[in-house]
Structures are given as structure tokens and as C-alpha cells.
Length: 275
Length: 259
Image 1 (cartoon, each protein chain N blue to C red):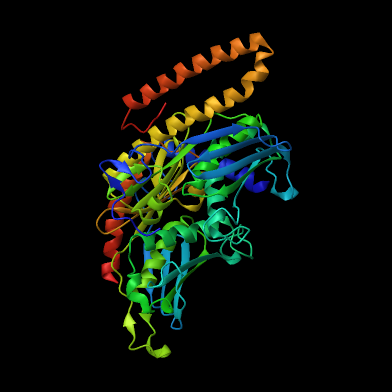
Image 2: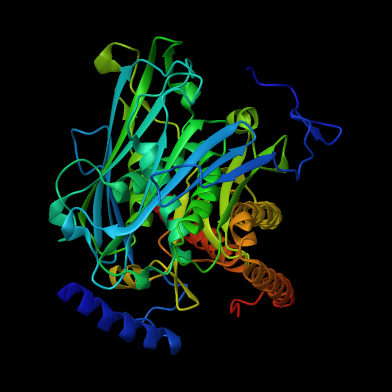
């Protein structure tokens, strides 16, 4: 596709979205038989699979850590996932994406619970349409929960970009190709940032606004991730009625605690000590 | 194992200093180490520079030759950035193909230069679709004293400012200075126990939770950012680092005007 003259006409983007609107997301939990946890996720035209194995033994042995688990993350794009066939195997881009994705989810894992063991995360991009690393992180975080890995919370991820000099949420391929900036972000439910990359051109005011937009986007994604996980396990829990009631009470109290932390954050804006 | 123990002890020491608003080498939180930049140090390279940032020492060399452009940018020159963490620089580096740290460093350096449009790539086209100038930026880390990212970005841009394109050698007109339109400068900060410190030393880098690099341009805009490390930042901390980085880059840019 050639560069369109305008990306935003009357406040509507090329694919019909508003500037602060995410692409539709579809989530399926527990889709693989062999993996300990898994997730299939569609984010717009992106189609990704995530699988989690572990905690398990570390091979090679010398990679193990005496006090914590090693977290390994492999992001891989299928050769048919893009317009021009991609040469199979890791390239420099996927090495970097794997590294930052691991660092996006690892802060949420209680690695100290599993010394000398490995937690392996695999993300396979079946179809790519800008934002594959964010889709991969969203799926990986659900797969980790599905694998019953103890976590501080889920990580949610989306990108903010700039087209026609305007900030927009969640770039799709054409916006990414010709856009002026792209900034993928991943966040904890409390709005702390575990992944941040940017290339392009942003002023400091735009950076500030972009972080706010990303926070809103990640909040919406967090809701979808949570619903997907609850949906997956509700059926099993229905067989144990009392447990379901327990889950609901926990869910409710969790909701209020999330709301309260958000308020605290707003109140303390500008402060660096985020309690 | 012994390294783990040492790290634990150092961590306690540095944490206790941070609590007292101090750093092991006596710097302020927003203060970076001394920088010495030398250019034109390798005659065989079309451009070169060495950077000493505290204990960190690295050398960047630029080679330029004509070659085929990428199919999607037929009328643009090509930048290829590579960074080597050679085993002499640190006991933690091993020989072999670049690992994830080397790849990340090279890609963030590349992004800063590319996205600031520092090099006019269209001006490096010889015959559209057939022949363009290829710019190879190679950075060798010689001594790892921490904060390789900032040192590598400085070395790359210093070496680029030194480049003469060897057109005569290839029978393509007269030699010319590579036109540089912007001086992107990277500034890295780490989070240690809730405090943010700029230009981490090797020990500070090792114990830090998260690390953030912000590359900014002459006009004060930001052309690249990268968070790395297992840790978290609040949006406030990110905005704060961006402010400090832009301010600090202005000071550093003046160094280049002296070169």
C-alpha cells in the first residue's frame, strides 16, 4: 500500500477507529495440550500463540540461578506471517524483542519461589500486522497464569503512535509503516511500566500524553485478559459451587483494591514514591 | 556463586548510600562521569572515534562502500550498526556471535541515529535502485565500566561527524564530508530502590532494577527510548528521566561543537 494522503479524516482512522480506540481482541485460554499454560490471541489482524513450560529443570545446567528461577522468552515470527516471506529463525529484531518481552513479564513472576529452575515462554507470531510484541506479551501473561505460575499480576501491553502529527492508540500496519513515532508499552494493573520502547519523534509533552493513552489502553486490555481467564476456569469451578462463591468474593475485593490503588496514583501524581 | 555473594554485599552498600543521597564515586544523582572523545584515530576507517566515559572505553569505526539499496527504499543509503562485546572488555563477555545485550545496544544506537534523521540518507543515493552508499557503524567495547549505551551512542555520532565519503576511490566523483543534520545524544538512567541515577557505573548497573535510555535531538524532541532490565518505572519516573536526558544532552552536545 502506498502512503495515504491522510491517516485521520474527521477524527476517524483508516480502519474506522477513533484515535484512542484499540483494535478488537480475541482471547482463548488453554489451547495447547502439551504446554503447562497457553493462550491464543488475536489483536486486530495479529494472530499469536503463547505457551509456557515450567517451572522445570534448566538445560544447560550452568544457566541455572541458585536463588531464583531463570525466565526465558522466545519470540518467533512464522515465515508466512508477513507480506514478504521472512527467513525462518531468529534475526536481530526477534532477539531484541525476545529480550524486552522477557523483561516485560519477569518483574511480575515470583521467581524466588523456584530456585534452580526454568520458566520458558514461547510466543509464535502466526500473522503480523504491527504490534506483534504487544500481542505476544498479552498472550504470554495469560499463558503464565494458565500455567499456574505465581505472579504479582497480569501484564497488559499496547502501543501508542503518531500519525498526521496526532497521537493514536495501537497502530496497525499502514500507520506503523508511515507513522512518525511508535511506542510499545507494557504495564502492570497498577500502571507501572515494564516495557517501554520508542522510535520516531516525540516532544516531551507528547511523551506525557502518550503514556496516559497507553495507560488507558492497557487498562482495557487488562479487563479482557481477566475475563478470558475467569471464563476459562469458571466451568471447572461450577462443579465446586462453594469455590465459585469464594472466587467471586475475591474478585470483588480485588476490583475494589484496584480502584483504590488507581485513586492513590492520581492523588500522588508528580510524586516519585509510589506506594 | 562468589560473584552472587559479592553482588549481594555491593548491593547492600550501594543501597545504603542511595538512602543517604550518595553514590559510591561521590557523584550527584543527575551527574555523569567525565567524558573524553577523540576522533580520527583509525586512518584506515572513513570515520572513527574513541570514547572514554569514566572507566568505560570503546572505539567506533565507520566503513563506507557502494552497494545495493534495500528494495523498499531504492533511493536511500543504508546504515548498518553493529556492536561487539569483545571478551577482553569484561570477564562476563564471551567470544562468538552477538548475544542479546550486544544486539540490543546496537539496535538502540541505530534507532537514535536513524530516527533523528541525523544522516540524510537520500543524499547517499548514487543510482536509484542500483547503487547507494552503505554506512557500516561498528562499535568495539574495549573496557566495560558500565553504561555502554551512552558511550556507544556518543562514539557512533562522533565517528559519523568525522566521516569523509570515499567517492574518488570508487570513481564516483569527489570525496565529500558526510552531511550530519542532527546530533542525537543518549542518556541512560537506572532505578535503584526508588531513586533515579544518571549514567550508572558498572556496579550501579548491575544492582539496578530497571534501566531507561532516552535519545534526544537538537530541538529537544525524543527520537528513541528503551527500557531494559527486570524492573518497573512509574510514568512519572519516565517523564522525569526524559526531562533530565534532554537537559543533559544539551550540555553534551556542546562538547561536539568543541571538536
